[in-house]
Image (tube, rainbow, N blue to C red; front, side):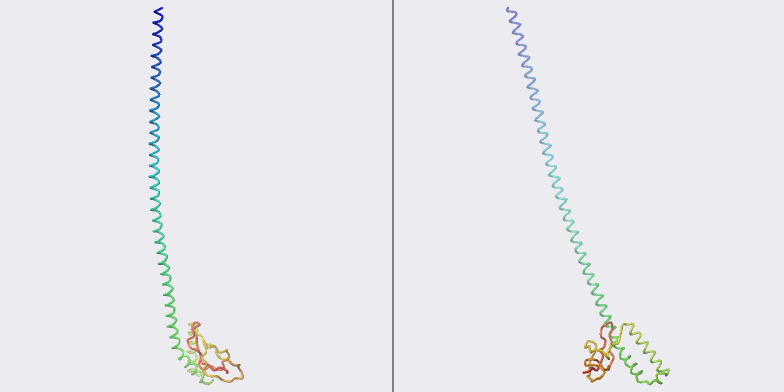
Length: 214
């Protein structure tokens, strides 16, 4: 009876020791799992922190690059605007120079034409004073040829005589020096031309001296 009790005590002790071992192993495994979990949490936090830092750095670099791009574009726009304004100024200068050159040429040509008109007047007076027989003489024929050549060249330069007799008086073209009575023309119509007037490219070089019907 004593032997059986002793064996029973030893069996109970072994089971208790075995249970303690299992408990210790379970506790150790739990501790290891907890440590591993803590390490995973810490690693996750580190990764999250690194990701935030990376995102912040990326955002900062992107913002800095965008600012540099905007500044560069502003500089390009400023230079383009300056070039456009300079080109516009040059184009205005060119047009103004051409206009001034044309005006100077017009003034010079008009002055030359005006000085040639008395020569034309003398040719016309000389030819008008000749009789029909005298007009057949070589000298008169030569004068007439020179006169026609002179008028042809003036016409090529766009110099034209102003129409007068039978036309309505126009103060922009005609200079009335006297009034006359006429059965042929109505009042305000030019009845006589005393000196022929001329235009150069639609600009009056010399007004016609006329007599107007009163």
